Length: 200
Ligand code: GRF
Image (spheres, rainbow, N blue to C red):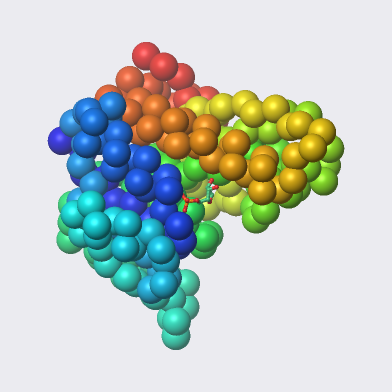
């Protein structure tokens, strides 16, 4: 059984997509053992609790980044987490964290990386004028949205799209893509060759 730890900062819809997929056996042999938020007001916390998931709040306030990450690591270890899923977790992680869980941290990002890393990816895509965008699940290293890509899904950009409509269409894809990617990683049917994540 793969023990998942989910890190959130906000709404938590990707976390819920993973939780629903585990409940429905679309992801097998995995369980969410802890949800950690760095924001005490994250709406995702209540959603997690309402479906019986254990939650912990670890705020950054008053701590330097390494101290905060050490607390996160302590909690992940306390719950014996094998795979960390970032789901709208809004902080960059330093090498001290990413090395501790090397190739065992996933993130979902709302663009076709390497295009539009960082904040407001959907707005960046619209403003750039691309005709296609989408979402990416990747392993996390200490670069901004830069680790090896596990899976991507493409969404067309429409002439009448706003940031809101494009974000909503991408989000629908995110929920499916994250489930597929976590399932793949849990099954272990891949290898990482350089930057490439290949199916085996
Ligand atoms: C998603 O768009 C995700 O790609 C990005 O942050 C957003 C989080 O949404 N990293 P939610 O909290 O999962 O609803």
